[in-house]
Length: 112
Length: 420
Image (tube, chains in turn orange, blue):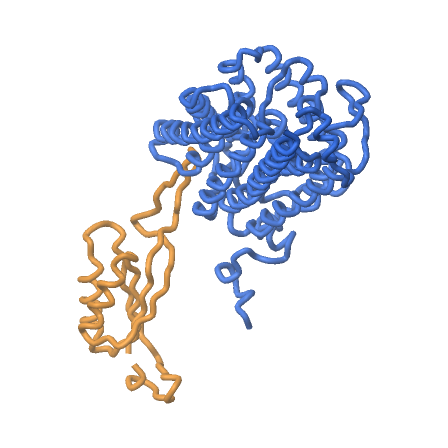
């Protein structure tokens, strides 16, 4: 089992969700986050004085999937979230030791 | 004929009361404007300040302010003496008829109209000292300001004192209300210092954007609306053709000046910053209104638009300049009401042949000097006795928590108030 975590541009969330649904991902968790990468921040203006916004709004998306699904998930996210411009985000994959479905008590791949 | 006289009295009194209600509503405008231009963590406290200063102003003006500003018998042209608490007696019908038209509105309607002006002057102060002042220090100042400082200079002009005798003209209070309020705020800001984080160690400005632009815009519209009462009511009478026409002209000019102020401030901001800053457009509307307040009756509507537009240009430069001088005024109150108030007083000479530059400048100087010195002393004493500024830690957490113990938007900022 793997946990796929992706940081994407907020306006791409709907496309990514659709792409994941198409390949059979059953559920994702989404969080509004802020951060910076190579895109860095941008400047804004208030009453004539500039200030730098260091952290840009992004969406963090988490999906727990079976190990054999990982490549398809990565492909779906990459395809849907890609604009070709700086700041498209990143995908992280990590191992999942255990998964429990709270309602039934199922564990492991059955709980995904 | 007597019936008509009584009816006119009733009509003028009614007009006075209703325009007073419009001015009272400006307190809502100030509350929303200030709530929009501070950070979310200071919202509940600025609202608390706004409603409590209004109450303080009403009570202090009833107790002593009104009789100082409009003394039954003044000691001399500069010292009115202390009068009595407001009573409930008013003109009788016989007195009104016997006056031959000199008494044309209820005495208590005059108090009501005047008291909401005091509250307006005090509202100006609250925005400038926002986000860092102790609530009760502010209210102590409000007691002195509305009970004494404001009524004194009000007596000099509207109470028939020394400035009035000099030929100083101020129709609805560019000086008496706006410059006075802004000067008291200026003295407070000098002793209070800037908000933490507003200026970087290298001296550059680090802007602190307001939390809620829709509220700031709503507040500006409410103030714009209330201003029809502020200026329109200051004509004091509406019950004949000539006066009704005058009132209409005052309404039109007040509206035009605000429109001119918006456009001028927007264009100025666009040229200076490359962006159209909404907060500058809002301040531009208010600047136009302040600019026309000293004389909304003699200009043509086109001239009123220009007077307002000049106010709109001035306010943008004033805000930038005060910021460079490290005078931190979160809502721009000192620029809008003070700097543009001065312009309004001087602009009277453009359209009113009875005004002289020397009398206008004298009035401006006297109001500024008196309010500044009296306010500085008052703020200074409060600072020595209980302190005027919250601690750095409280300022960081927000004065909503340290002063009021509650948050304006609890769901957004923490787990408190989750209903559990």
